[in-house]
Image 1 (cartoon, rainbow, N blue to C red):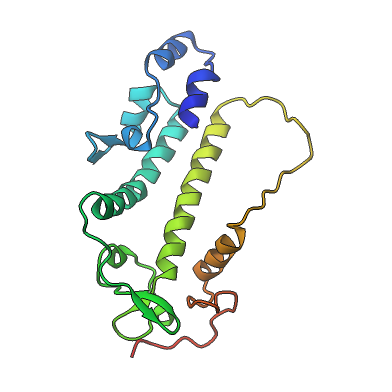
Image 2: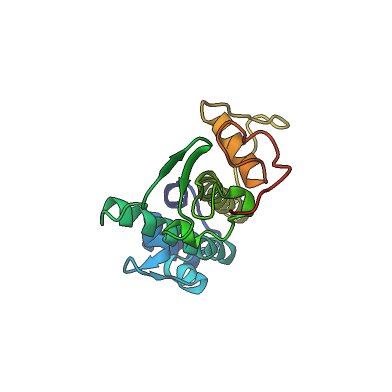
Length: 199
């Protein structure tokens, strides 16, 4: 979306910067924006110089790139390399995974109350963290983009738009799990009051 708006709607005041912007369009995929040869993460300096972006926006792309790269690696391992997620255990309290298996071992937010026993944890904290980081990345890019371009005047000044959808309740539950509510199915709305250590 930023790529399309940058190409079709943005015009820079500086003529030389505007000429550079026109001759260096933003790529349509996030990977091409932040990765060199699909592997190495670009620095903010490289992103800024390659596309003529304002520094603050280039810095935001660079700061999000490590998370994006890890998420892309997980996707590629599963979809393209067939590595899978290891075992998913169905328990009376919900689905669990091994916190020692990739990609779950890279998550540093496991807490004692996430454990069903000494070997498996609820998968919900990892899902919550992944989805909320993705939403946060989109928000950060949007705010950075809006801070460096002059937007058109408000269509309805003083009014706010609130969006409802079938996914809202699930996002609320993930927010609660991420904030410390119970990570077990059917209990996510209730705060966890007496965490039990792994057996």
